Length: 254
Image 1 (cartoon, helix red, strand yellow):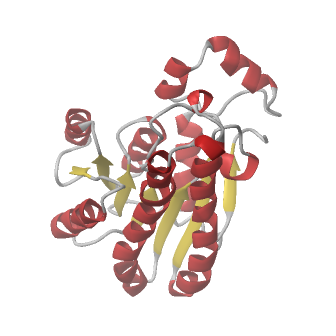
Image 2 (cartoon, helix red, strand yellow):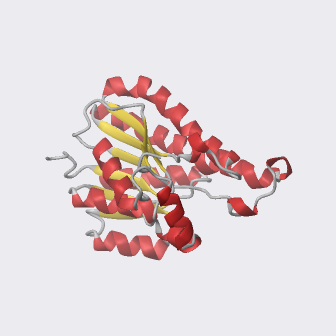
């Protein structure tokens, strides 16, 4: 099946590691040009872009999700190099300063610790990125947006209150945007991973925990970054003709 992605200009925020890296590679394998953004991994991003063919095929672009000036600069860089963005994968993420198991009860959480994660960190930056690329997308009449959320938005867990709220906000945004932009050919969807076997997860969690979580999953395995990437590529391709405004969980049925 031809996914119609050859030559398409794809912007993957947070495209250097984990799900983002797998997504970058999957789009490149379909013949797309990929601009992958990074925050703290400049050398890694630059190396990946070179491996994918350099400036004509791949760009490494700095991007700070919490800084709206940086967000705009990243989009303008891609536009200056390639003339626009046909596909946006909003995957960048801002974690809290402490892991969930080290957080106090929510009533004791310092404002300065959770507010940046809720607003600039995981909601406003993505919305602004969409706003910056949407005009060109509507003019072309065929473009795609995938917003990467989390099943914590639906299921929750201790310590996920502010992060889950931000990720749930992406669904509300996508539902509204689908009504606004889909008549012009711009399809927008939310992809929600559960616990995924990224390098971060493999490093942070013991094998016994990963095995236990897999046992609680109908498919009896945890998703890999490639599982997410393949779903994202499908939704952002010509093979998706009329799926928009949806929340799609990629978590083995959990």
